[in-house]
Image (cartoon, rainbow, N blue to C red; front, side, top):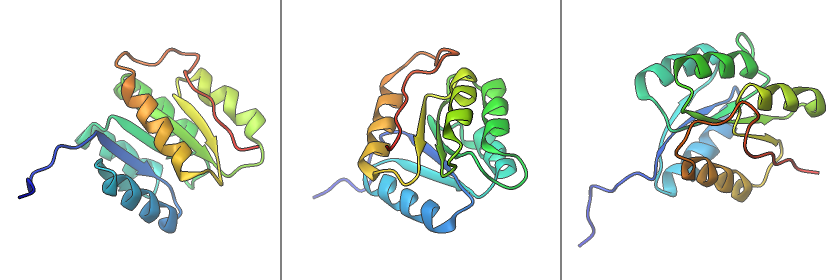
Length: 143
């Protein structure tokens, strides 16, 4: 008989203003064994970080209101141990990536990204017990 109380691989927070992407990522990571929370914009993300203390945040950069870079800055102030994986659909990645990485993002991925690539980035983030350095740790982009 299967144990009905399973152990989570880690707690994730998905932050994106695209509801279809949030649903897909939430289902994919939940099915893989993670506890997943979601937020549609930066303000909700900061509330969720304070309430749930996720291990990893998957954070869209371009959102209305607080953008991902502003949210990253506030997450760093709240808890520098939380790994933040930045996700963007922007074609201006060359400008945004150095800023995000310098602010302590763990990884920077561009949309569209392979779901397996995102799972690998989350696994790598969870494998690092110490807080990220100010220079960042992992950069991965689609060509």
